[in-house]
Length: 166
Image 1 (cartoon, rainbow, N blue to C red):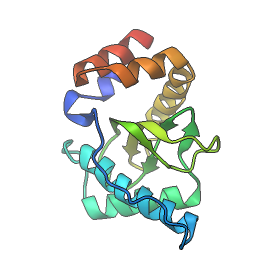
Image 2: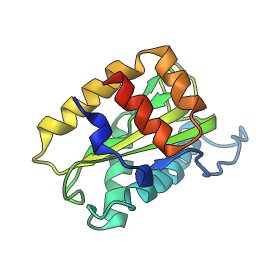
Image 3: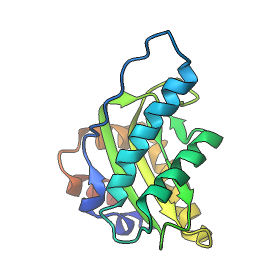
């Protein structure tokens, strides 16, 4: 599957900028994590916004937040796949973002997420969406590939790294 065709340099952000205050022990860890995810999802939706294939940005963000409330999309090993099927996606789209420091995204292994593949598709477009998700999951099970994505210096290198694994 040619995942590299689904992503362009404009949909890649090599360092996320979302600032999340450290947890202060006076509130709920779940609430703190949810608020942090919402801020981060806002930045990730901003990446997809570079693609002209979204409808209402605010509704798309709401859809991502509601999806994340159901269950975390962090799969462990520093990887998260925020993904939705939404009427706000005119067709399949995918973006990539990286964070050197990592974010608490509720991964089952308790590790921060550093690599984010954000995907949105219309509700009726299951085939491509599921194939990309499955293929990326397989690629990211390779520790050397995850490390390569952490070390790339340009958006073009991200695309080349994905292409080399296809």
